[in-house]
Structures are given as structure tokens and as C-alpha cells.
Image 1 (cartoon, rainbow, N blue to C red):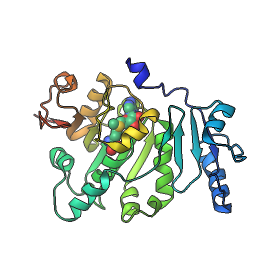
Image 2: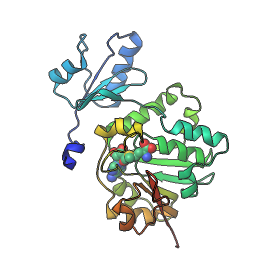
Image 3: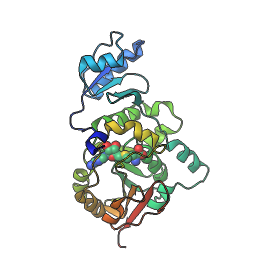
Image 4: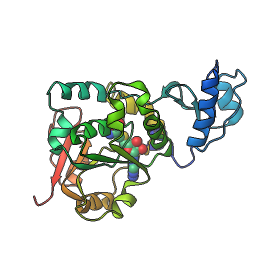
Length: 274
Ligand SMILES: C[S@@+](CC[C@H](N)C(=O)[O-])C[C@H]1O[C@@H](n2cnc3c(N)ncnc32)[C@H](O)[C@@H]1O
């Protein structure tokens, strides 16, 4: 299987918004608002199945105005993606019980930190980073997929869809839609504490990162560029962190040592000043 089979291109994503099968007045209003939020057409549902809508409209994605809204991709019509704190919840719950989080530990996150999450994705890591940074801290989360960036900001607009404790963490996250290399290049040197990269693994890990696997058709598959890495090194006051598979050649590429060589995932940390 080639990379182009694994990763549909992101440049040509087309989307329409519909109401759910049984549309309440609230769902009709939500569909109107979502179509505007995602800058996509709202088309009549007319009791059509999703398969029918994909065929009739010739689009890559259908956004169904449920609460939370569900994104269906034509390649995965049975596996919608929607905002869900997912893998962040057990980590956040562990934190409240005083159990340290591995990412927060390796990145040395402290209360009050300003952190760039250069790869927002589902936002699970951003939520954990926001918890680590505390009320005085902030996370700037960058995402190049318009759909994923907008779905997350919709969740912020909806105050976390009622998941307990989410609204206060979402408030600490400032989402920027764009390519991280461009945004980092425009930031002053030493202007944030930590920059974190979690690029898409070239091949999915089964049973791991379930949320991001549902989001995969909407994600940008590109590896980190040299420009992005060097910009991050310039912008970070303390460190730049990379998450990858332990066997990934990206650790050697950036001169990093994976923290757990035999685990499913590993972190590598570049520290400013050695
Ligand atoms: C593995 S996911 C990140 C998962 C995330 N840490 C989480 O907790 O859900 C990688 C994300 O980075 C995004 N991405 C890839 N290249 C990017 C770039 N150049 N700029 C911004 N975002 C990028 C992808 O679209 C994808 O959503």
C-alpha cells in the first residue's frame, strides 16, 4: 500500500452539512450555524441515507448537525469523527489523583507555561498540556486541517459539549489554523516555553490513539519539515518535544533519543542550551 492510499490529500476536501435523520428545530438551527462555521453548503436532508448524500453531492465529507456534530468521510462512512476528549480523559483523571502524565513529565511542563502544540489533531494532548499549564498558562494549538481546526473551535464555542471540566481547559487553548512552519516562523525567538510536535505516524497503531485514527482521513500526513523544526528551536525557551514510534528515523534525524525504546510510542526532547 502506498502513502497516497493511506493518506488522502487534504487540499481538495469538500464538505456539505445536513441535519440528522430526525431533525428537531434545534438541529436545524445547528445545521445553519455549522454550515457557516465550516464555510460549506447546507443541503437538504430529504430523508436521504449518507451513502445517497455522498453519491448525490459528490463530496468527500458530510457533516451531520448532531450534538456534538459528526463528520463522515466517504472512505470511512461507518466511522464518524466527532469531538470527544477520548484518550485525554483517563490522563486528566489520573492528574487529578496526583498521577504524573508522561508527556507533561518529559516536556517538563510547569504551571504558567506557554506551550505550542504544533499538531492539534483531536486536541487530546492540548487538553492535557492545558491542564499542566494551569489557569495562568496557555496552549497555542496549530492545525493545518481546516476541518479539524474548526471542529475543535466548535467544541470550544459549545463549551466542551458538557464533558465535565472541559470548558475550563478549552478556554486555555488558542487554536490557529495553518501550517506550523509558517506560524512558528512569524513568532519571536524565545517567546514560548515548550514546542510540541506529534506528527501522523506513517502507519496506524492498532488500539492506540483511537480518536486520531477516526480523524485520520481529515489529517495532514506530512512529516515535520526542517524549517518547522528549526523554527521551533528558535521560538522555544526551554525545549522542543517530538512524539513518534520509538523505531522512527525522525529521532535520529533531529538528534534525539527516544525515552522508551520498547514502548508503542516514544518522546524525544531537545533542550535549549544542551
Ligand atoms: C497525530 S495527529 C496529533 C494528535 C494530537 N496530539 C492529539 O492529541 O490528538 C497530527 C496532527 O497534526 C496535523 N498536522 C500535520 N502537519 C501539520 C502542519 N504542518 N501544521 C499543522 N498541523 C499539522 C495533522 O493534520 C494532524 O491532525
